[in-house]
Length: 180
Image 1 (tube, one colour):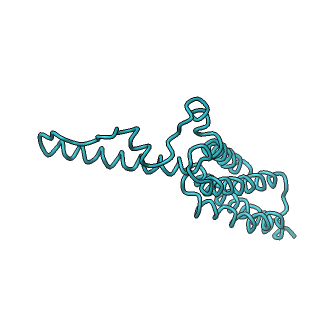
Image 2: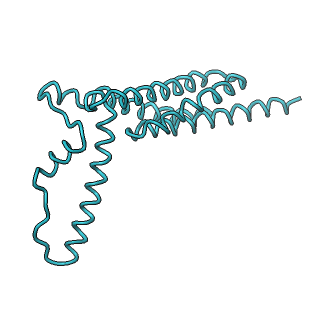
Image 3: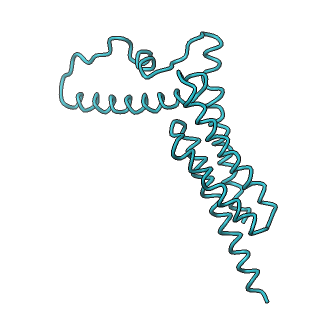
């Protein structure tokens, strides 16, 4: 039971630490030294491509396909970077996005803490309560905190860990009832 849960809880904790960094610390060093951080999609685009980013001379169709692939990759990376920038306190223009991500981080951490504290307890009733109380806590980051991939991963792992713990303790309870 615990042999399977401990690596999952460790991975979840690493995701929580990475999310903490993205929300509260990412961009703070840049801001302290230069007082400028990319705060929008336009800022990020200008810094990556410059103000006059155009394609001018193309020789054949393979170059067109290569340029199109590069454009798609850059577009996706800029979209991910913009979402990540909108979820940190130092890099966001508004406080609602980082606040929502911080709430999702707190909810994921509370699930992690509850599950790790139940490792020493073998009470099926407390595991059932933990499962039904932490399930909605993990669904919130999945629905509303899409800017930080590590927070989404921590929420998925939280659902998997609490479900596994619920299943394992239910199996222990069933095995205990079978002994007469």
